[in-house]
Amino acid sequence: MKTFATGLKMPEGPIALAGGSLLVVETLGRKLSRIAPDGRVSTVAELGGGPNGAAIGPDGRCYICNNGGFGQMDLPDGGLMPIEAPIDTPPGSIQVVDLETGIFETLYAHSEATPFWGPNDLVFDNDGGFWFTDFGRDRGRVRTRGSVYYARIDGSEIREVVHPVDGANGIGLSPDGATLYVASTYEGHLLQFRLSAPGVIDPAGGHAPNGSSLVGRGGPGQYLDSLAVDSAGRICCASPGIGAVLVFPPEGGTPEVVPTGDFLTTNICFGGPDRRTAFVTLGSSGRVVTFDWDVPGLKLTYE
Image 1 (spheres, rainbow, N blue to C red):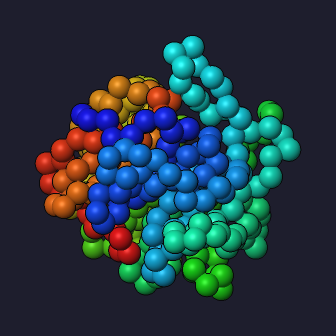
Image 2: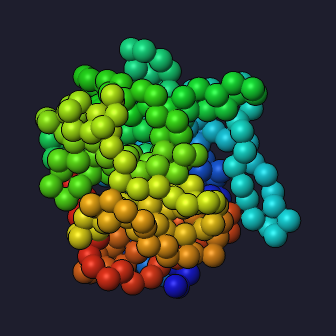
């Protein structure tokens, strides 16, 4: 495992770019940053709130899930940890950033049903739309429950497709685009949904009433965060708690555990010339690390 970058304020949402650079959001730094191949960090956009997940859209812009903001705890070892947002923290949003200018706009701040309380992660399909999760939010003794949404980049459509999903976090698509994966953080469940059309879940595709079925679950202390899929169809899910990447086989079962050394391991993506380099964000220590992967990562639709 090699250190790629340091000094970040809770990195998340990594996107590998051509030429060896990496985009990350800094959730506690409230910005989108670019990391050069030599590890130098520069600011792309000051987004405010709590940018949490990122993906490149069909128009080449960067789409951001912004959770609205966290509180922050300074740890004795010098690390950082997000904590419950202050009660007056505004709802979250979906933002869009022009990577050349850093100019950004808010695309969505609510659905027809509700404001967003914690937009977390997103993935684009081959039809030009995107799925995203809303984690929910703790507000004193009350917790808003999470959801899964589908939306269009022109602002014309946004639908709440699945509710509730407690702690809806990482989201991804299978190599054939026919299966949607969603990680539920606190339950430690990796769920799958069979798709019948763009933005449409087949209700008969799973065992649960919402159409989901279980791929696998984390063990004790293995929470589930954001995820990426590799070319073998394995679902590679960051696991805060023990600090690892859990690698779930697509047919279901017990995941392989790849330790990272940071209890707040938040996300993974694949890059490099052959897509065999795993970039993993380590939230507490503010680092991005890399290591070799045994197969290429799955190429995302608009990378």
